[in-house]
Length: 337
Image 1: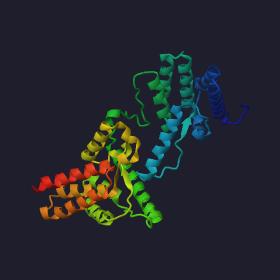
Image 2 (image 1 turned 45 degrees about the vertical axis):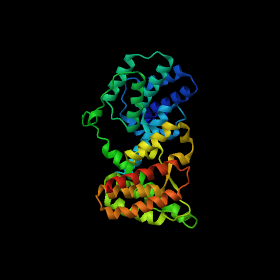
Image 3 (image 1 turned 180 degrees about the vertical axis):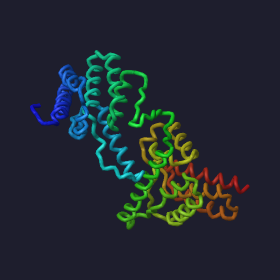
Image 4 (image 1 turned 120 degrees about the horizontal axis):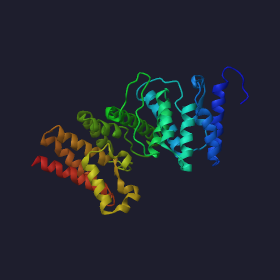
């Protein structure tokens, strides 16, 4: 606080922000407001960009900041991994002045002395500042808590970004691809560590992802190989149909899973009731691909035999397996006739 060099203003602001954080965490909201006000007063903040509020140094303030930091790290990971963007700067940081505004408004909301004047002042500050990623996320949470109309944030090129213009479909595809790569790697580790005691296929998730993309030839090839390997296996692992995986399946498996949960909601607490064996999954994918590719009747006869073997091999309490095996058997018989 007694720093006298040319960078003193930025250190002065940063020190007040950290002090405000400490007072905020101990419930001394008015004192925290006073420190934030010293940072927010009209002055030249051009030097403040050299110092930022580091997320990893902050104590637990509230769930919003915790979520913001988590999203910022996820954003950085996606840019590095999925988009192959070699970003070196840290994203889990806040600009000094913006964080002071965030904390100031948080304190006001707790003491119930907030006003539109404070939000207007914040809006003016946003228009004159180049925001960091964490700043945008944190300020969005402030505005949503005040039930205020959405604000428009302009970039340094003065381009207006609206929610309607954002296309998240590519991001969803990248996230799905990244998740599948991790699951495939997981299968390979399973085969390495437990292949001597159980029959493990490493391409079931790869086949499922190919089916999801509409690559039925690739899916059929992988699924057929997996069926041949798993058909006489003494022990097979399961594939869960819980919500985190459900978007990878098609409507029929989703519907069957949902029906079992409607009939008995308690069954979701037992893993067997929301799981299918890898053999069942492989047979399902194999059958669906054969039907979509309009294979001949003769090529479907062996598949019927495989289904009957699988039905005999699954215990009676594997409800979801038996339902799915019955569905694909009926689909083949309907196709043949």
